[in-house]
Every structure is written in C-alpha cells, then in structure tokens.
Image (cartoon, rainbow, N blue to C red; front, top):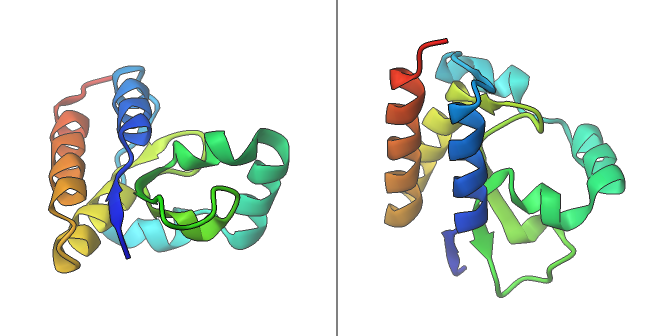
Length: 117
C-alpha cells in the first residue's frame, strides 16, 4: 500500500483550525465522533469524492479515485476538525511507518492546542 500525505486535506485542516472550526476532544471521543459508513455515504452523495478526500490525511493513489479505500486517516466529522481524530491519526500513522502523515498530524495537534477561541 502506497499511502502518502494528502496535502489538500492538510491545508483544509489547517484552515479549519485557524477559523476555529475545531472540537478539542480527547482521543477516546473519536470512536463516537468519527463518521459512520452511512454518514460517509451521505456526504459523498452530496459533495463527491474531491470533498471527501479533504477529510483524510492519507491517500493511496494506486487505488481508484472514486472509492473510499483510496482515502485513510480521517481527522474530522465533515464539519470540524476533531482533536481526538488527529491524535488517532498521529498514533496510527506512526505505528504503520507513515512518517509524513504522523508528522503532519503532530503539527496539526500543536496548532489545535495553541488555538484559543
């Protein structure tokens, strides 16, 4: 699997944090907050794969463009960046040797933790 950093998603995540569109939750909250398959499908129907991709820090360009399997490491709930999601991304990416994604998640976490509303 050739998963690499999705730079468009990272840019969107940074912009959302700067706009204050972030939930400062804990890692354990991500399991409840992460979008369900039905929510993903609904988002895809309304917005398409280009927008769906922007919510995932990982992209596997060897997989078909119009499949969910192309995108990995989700960090938000399709409206806000979730701190718990970013923590999960950092951990999973590091465990699977996706250093560029882990580094990007760490930088996002620092941006989130430095943000004051």
